[in-house]
Length: 167
Ligand code: SF4
Image (cartoon, rainbow, N blue to C red; front, side):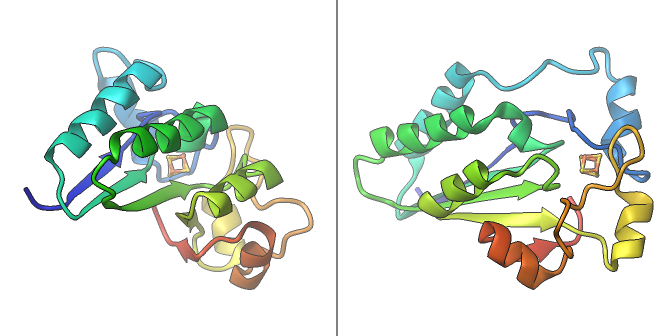
């Protein structure tokens, strides 16, 4: 078998923001059931276990949303633990996570650094453009207080490896 790359959306379309152009904001309302909630740790276990039963060389696991951080740090700590448990052939591991940054704290940053996550931060162009289209459910901007929103500032604050333009 070749390397296996997983794209896991553990919060499906759930998000703590409400960007003007978001696909999910209206799309989830068209579904028979708008949301099935957050992914359980049991499902996470099944997905990771099966990936390692097929993979050779490497396993990549990318988390995306909606907003994946809604699942909480303990969900991702469990993902790391499961990878260590099932990686009996010592395959190369690559973690990635795309976030809107809204709920990122020092604790998250430490977790990302410690576990070598490649983190994509969704930023739309200039500060003015970003703030116009990307906001929370009350219309408030999502750039953290004290942050310039620049790449250098974000790298210093969180150890982000690169900003990402959309998700
Ligand atoms: S952060 Fe992403 S998922 Fe959340 S509302 Fe904005 S575009 Fe949609």
